[in-house]
Image 1: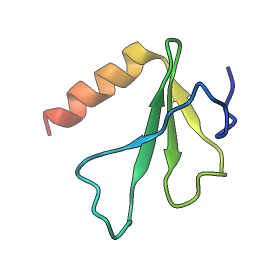
Image 2 (image 1 turned 60 degrees about the horizontal axis):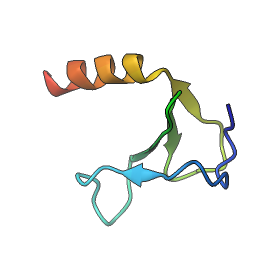
Image 3 (image 1 turned 120 degrees about the vertical axis):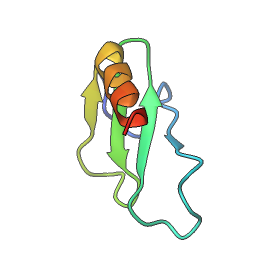
Image 4 (image 1 turned 45 degrees about the horizontal axis):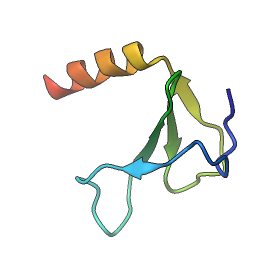
Length: 65
């Protein structure tokens, strides 16, 4: 699994709830085998990668808060 931010298979997206001023934002890139997460303020730092099922469970949990 590649974690290279310039890798062509990773298309990074920021939440539509993120303001134009930046701040505390995460970016997400989904591939068939993993959902990649990185800090938008420092995209060169390490990324996290989760199985799609685990990311979906987290998103469902967070939506219920």
